[in-house]
Amino acid sequence: MTGQTNTRLSDLFGLAGWSKGELARLVNRQAAAMGHPQLATDTSRVRRWIDRGETPRDPVPRVLAALFTERLGRVVTIEDLGFVRRGRSGRRQDVRATENPDGLPWAPDRTAAVLTEFTGMDLMLNRRGLVGAGAALAAGSALSNAMHDWLRNDPARLPGPQRAVDPLHADPAGFDRYEAAPIGSEEIEALEHSVEVFRAWDASRGGGLQRKAVVGQLNEVGGMLAYRHADHLQRRLWGVAANLAVLAGWMSHDVGLEPTAQKYFVIAAHAAREGGDRPRAGEALSRAARQMVHLGRPDEALDLMKLAQVGSGERVLPRTRAMFHTIEAWAQASMGRGQAMRRTLGEAEELFVSDRHDEKTPSWMQNFDEADMHGMQALAYRTLADHDPSAAVPAQRHAKLALELRRGGHDRSKLFDHISLASACFIGDDPEQADRYARLALMSMGETSSHRTWDRLREMYRLTGQYAGHTRIEHLREEIAEALPRSPVNHPRTGQA
Image (cartoon, rainbow, N blue to C red; front, side, top):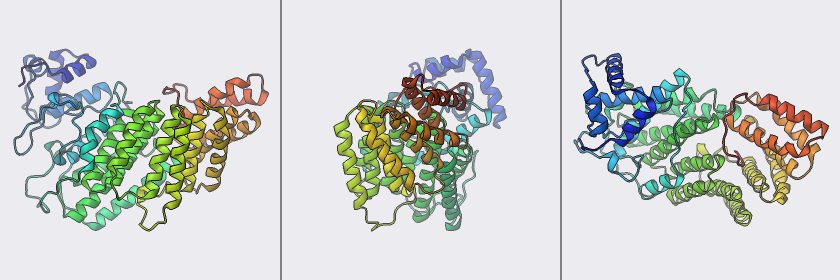
C-alpha cells in the first residue's frame, strides 16, 4: 500500500462510470465466473484500491483487468490499472513510480505473460464486437526513449530447459489460458508455416478477415513460451511469436485499431529480442513508425525509425536498411522536407541494389522486393506532392513501375499503387489518366478488408474537388462516395499507407 491515490485506476474508474459498490459487486460476480467463488469484495476495499494505492491479491487484478477491458472496449492490462506484479522472487516494481507510463521495457520473464494476457483480452473484445474506443497511442518519442538502451543490448540467457513439473517461468496471468508443455521441432515448423499462410492472406485481402485467427494463434504461442525449451527451440518459438505479433499489429492497424496495433508492435520487438533477432525487433518498430506517419505524426515516426535503425545492430541486411530508409523518407515527405526525402530515397536505392543475397533473406523481409521499393518511393513522392506539386511526376513513374513488377497475391499493394497513381495524376492536372487509375482502384475495393484503403480513397476524393464541372470526374466522385463506408473512421489528413 502506497498511501497515495492510484491515479491510473482512478482515471479508468471515472471513465467506466461505476460506483464503488457497483464495482465491488461486479468483481465478486466476475471472480465467481472465473472459478473463484470465495472472493468477497466490498465498497471499502474498492476505496482502498483507488484512494490509498492498495494492491489487491490475485486474482483480483486479473478480474479487474477483464472488467475494465469489457467496459471500455479496449484492452486494459494489470499495469494499466496501476498495480504491481509479484514475481517468484517476491521483488516488487512500483509501476506508478516509474517515469515510463507503460512499464517499458519489460523484464525478460514478463514478455510471454504480457503477450498471453494481451491477446486473451483482445480475443474477448473481438467476441463482443467492440472497437477499442477511448484508448490512446503512446508517443513515438516515449517509446524510443524507454527502449533505446534496452534494445541495443542482448537479453540475459536463462539456464537450460525446464521440466513440466518445475515452477513455470511465466506469470500466473497465463496459467488459466494454457497449460504449458514442451513441443518439438515439427510443431514449431508447423507454426512457422502458419505464419506464411497468414502473411499471404494479409497481403492479398487485408487484415480484417484473419486478424482474430492470428491473435488466437499468438495466444497459443504465448502459452507455449511459458515452458522454457532448449535454446534452439526457444529461439525459434520466440521468432514465431515476433512474426505473429507483427502480423496482429499490422492487421489491427489495417482495420483502424491503432492503440492495439501499437501494443502488438511493441510485443513483437520484445519477442524478437528475446529470440536474439535484433533486426526483426527493428522491423517491428518500423511498423509502428509507418503507423505514426499514417496518423499524421511523422516527427514521432522519425524518432521510432532512429531506434529501429540503431537497435537492429550490425547484422541487418542492406535490403532491410533500404526499407528503413523508405519509411524515413515517407515521414520526411509528410513534413514537406523534399531535399531530405530525396537524399534518403537515394540512399535506399543504393542499399537495395547493393544487396547481393550473400545471406538468406529472412521470411519477414521477402515481401519487400523491387515492386515494394517502387511502391514506397511512389508513396513518398505522392505525399511530398501535397507540398510540392512537381513531385507528382516521379510519383507516377514509380507507381507504374510498382504495378508492372507486382507479383500475384499482392492485391492490397496493387490497390494502393493505383490510388497513389490516380492521386498523383490529379495533382499533376491529368484528370483523364487519374479517372482511369481511380476506377481500377474502385474495382478491387470490395475485395479487401482494409480501412487504410478507405483513408487513401478519401484523400483521393479530396483531390477530385478541383475538377467540379468535369463530367467524368463528377461521376467518379459519386462512385467513390458510394464505395466509402457510411460511418468512416476519421484520421488526420496525411499521405496514407
